[in-house]
Image 1 (spheres, rainbow, N blue to C red):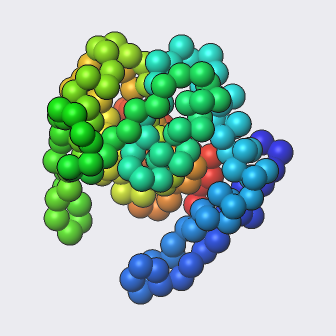
Image 2 (cartoon, rainbow, N blue to C red):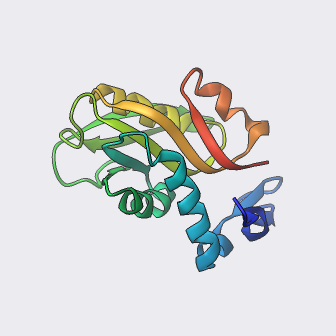
Length: 172
């Protein structure tokens, strides 16, 4: 990658709570060359993987997943929070440090055996992406890789993924 994308990630101290150093990607999204470089890098990585779809996790996974799917000429499938999808869904509950959450996908979003990449903007503790992979496994999809713009390595999300392959363009 010729463009250093880290220069387009802004640190916001004490957001959303004191002690958190928030990685703000809006400068990257607002710069056409940087955003294109991020999508292009993912597209080059997955161009020859015989994928059937890119699966984006609500909501920032949609920002990267939809243009990546278009670039690859394949479909985009959203994984959403409860009550957001109009047709019949399947779901999975997962634990957070402060409670539980749920993700859902249309029951007919993918055929069994479909090769997919699941994408989100950030890998932190890993709970959401692990839940997304579990949900995709319920459909019989093969998660080729989980992809992220940023990984916060000190939070250990990569370890939570276990033997599932993952990739992040930027690591902190």
